[in-house]
Image (cartoon, rainbow, N blue to C red):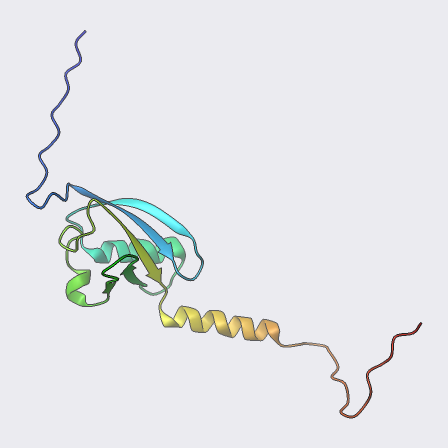
Length: 132
């Protein structure tokens, strides 16, 4: 039996193809995730995926990890297609959690660092010498 091979679909005029394979690297946890998105999908879809994947309650900031080190924050960037932003056929994006995530993490670290039952030494008292 002969196997028929379908010709590949022609690429778009920009050469971006039909999908964008994006690697997302979380700046806070150093975790990474890779996913393919439609080239016509807006960047906001990637932002929503990154928030869910890395456990952010709010939308994180996305940035290119290579020149021209673009930070995607403007509404027109978030609504632009992945192809029009030059993210096709593949790219790596740094995922920076919103400031509220950092503030919550710092507050938790400060609470954990505070002694709970330790009795402070009295000022002026010498430290107890080790018994030999």
